[in-house]
Length: 126
Image 1 (tube, rainbow, N blue to C red):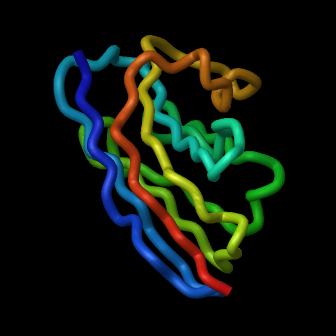
Image 2: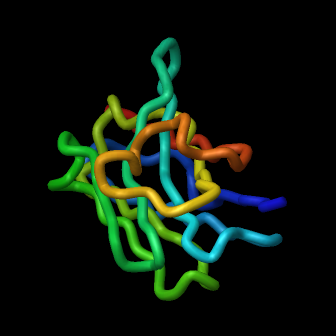
């Protein structure tokens, strides 16, 4: 069982930046991937970015210019840096772990992940 804990959310003004972190504990598959997803009020959850083996990463096309995902090693926390925050970035951000390796075409698919954190709220004001 994997436990995931997100932190770093909060209220920020439009144009600001935020770094979210995800700490994982428990037994995780050696080649598991970690992903960031978000769910805005009244909208479906969507993939933001994911990283596998602390190296291979994928970022949603619409966010590539503003988002960086990083992880120093598979034993370290995963981070999500969002620059140029916009009100439409307001959402609950979730960290998730997959049971196995995901190629880049699957890394942002919600159904590929079976362990989820509780989420951290990000609110961007204009």
